[in-house]
Length: 112
Image 1 (cartoon, rainbow, N blue to C red):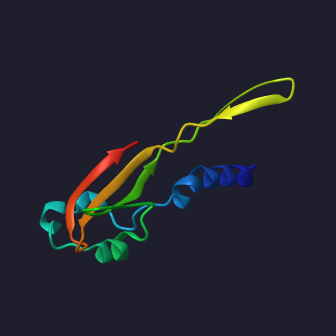
Image 2 (image 1 turned 90 degrees about the vertical axis):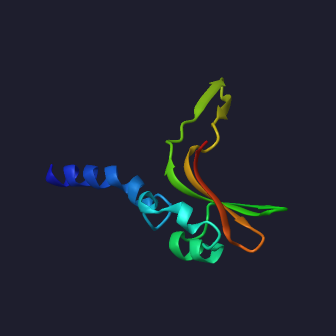
């Protein structure tokens, strides 16, 4: 019985420990002081590879997952034929926008 409870506790914390996201705590970062000086290379060193990268004519937008919302899917079927509907991944992201010189020009937290 003791092992059952220990297994349950371990499984309860497993999703949190496996979640990807920035290595650093972004709550204590003063992003305004980093505007114009903070580079994409520094962001890679601090947070690791971004989860989303978008190249634009003005530079680059990189996003790191802070928290993922639980994935839910719904299945419908009749007589062995059916379909599954899954909403797109959602959660909270750290979005950093860099100019063509790889300098930070904007930071924000976004929810999808």
